[in-house]
Image 1 (cartoon, rainbow, N blue to C red):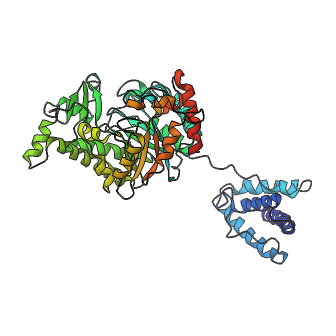
Image 2: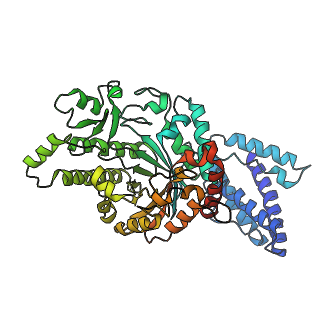
Length: 508
């Protein structure tokens, strides 16, 4: 009996659709109602997603309902496939009962009312896939200073609300990437085997906030079509006070507790501990920590900034340097430090790519390369000019057009010249935090960030974006930082509003 009901329903349904098809063929194809009917027919046959992956049986093609001569073949084909489908589903009896009821109702209603209500589409995945890579990176940095008020001491729901609002703001002005601090001081804003929980989560170093901030941020970013890069400081560690609070299971605490490795594997400058990249075990810890993030989280990139060797270096790494010399090393102490950073950067990239080859690795050095070389003992020219070190070089070109020492256009061209390796892109870091304030180190350009106007509206950032795009190796821009764009101090809100309005014009 149930089979008879199915056949009866299908005959009614197919004759109705055949009529729709015939009517549709007599009308102009551009008519919107005709297009709607054909789209609905496709959904009915192929399932909710239109690709044969829904909950309805799959057909190889849409049957030709305009030809009445083959209607019996169509009915047979539809009936056979429907029976096969129902035989594979445990709720087939319920579906048949619903179908029978629909046939009874058809005596007093249109044919459309007999069509079973399609099932609801599946819920959005809790971990949406990353959006496709676009040709231009339009990024903003969210530092631990931003997380200090967005995250620190907040509940799961409070942080989720805050970060969702922040990402909505970012999306609204045409940006497509967030670079979020997840390891500012040899700590972690994610579940890690190598580093303790950051105090910027729960408020207490080593204590979990009760949820995973990075998971929340990855999901929030990807659900909005934003890419997310996890930002780590490779060498900067805790203070003297903080290191005593770290559990003894972590490497930095073990090295601090050991009289041989303390002052060697890690060293202290100005009451803060730093990792020594001249030690292989240290480089392994840093690169393994980067690979851990890529392995456990669906991030689009790993990002490190300009914290390499700290300023004020003296003989803190003398023990490691003497071991290097004893093994036959010929480099001077300073050049050896530069080479250590070269090894570390390349090792991080290799570790990341060994887990997921499509994850982007970027480094953001100071825009002043003399400072990089002589203070941080870093040579980004090697990284940007040699294959295998990184995918993006993101110099912090935080200078105005009229800066006496480092004018913006000249500095962009300088970094464009450094970026020689195939596939490496130049991402220009821009200083939105300088909008509306005096730049004390800019010489004749000290008031440029306040006075710059075009037809009465400030447009410093727009001009910098447009010039950056003229660089042959250009791949995008990065804005530092979130707070300066969306929660500026009261005295410069008008300046920031002008600049943001002009940014929108060139980014959206």
